Amino acid sequence: DQQVKQNSPSLSVQEGRISILNCDYTNSMFDYFLWYKKYPAEGPTFLISISSIKDKNEDGRFTVFLNKSAKHLSLHIVPSQPGDSAVYFCAASLQGAQKLVFGQGTRLTINP
Amino acid sequence: EPEVTQTPSHQVTQMGQEVILRCVPISNHLYFYWYRQILGQKVEFLVSFYNNEISEKSEIFDDQFSVERPDGSNFTLKIRSTKLEDSAMYFCASSILTGTNEKLFFGSGTQLSVL
Image 1: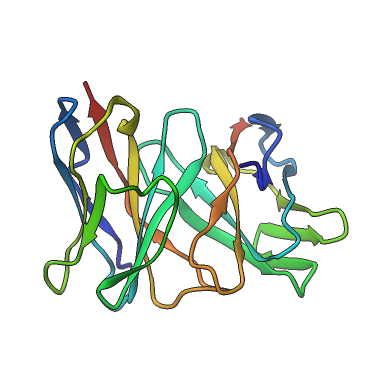
Image 2: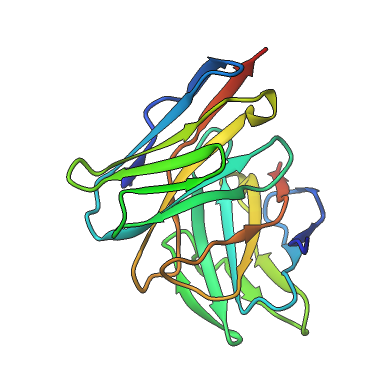
């Protein structure tokens, strides 16, 4: 089951620069997408989401872009801070369904 | 901020034994979920629960698994006869609503090790 894919297992970015995390999906019926952040020994924490009727959603330093034709979404963090170092999960849901389908996660490391 | 609480944080058991993982969802939430993450793999949906019954479950959630809301605050996952491949981090989650545009709040997880 590879409906949601995060092809980069890890990413290293300099503090202050932009971090871009990518996510691809195969099921065109997904209509809601979320990004979760996870620190070690903690559960995933909701970060930002986007509905399929939009192509961009912004919340402070975090922006999610959705390209439906390419079945691709990305999370931009700018400027990146050391506290952003975590594993980031992309997730998607189908209208009417109750489950989230997660990607494999990308470990982001922000270097001072 | 209200949070989902899970106990225990770690559980070690022998293969074939029963385990019960416990969760206290956020108090005004109506939908409850169990997910799991095997080491190095994706977070996977197991089951959702609403109005005292299972509303959706995955292929993973076979007859060895059951969920219960024994009182007004706890939500439990029982594995009847654990297998080695049940070793994983189990996350409980809850939400006020379900479906489109609703985010889940996750607990910190219970690390289950089956020996």
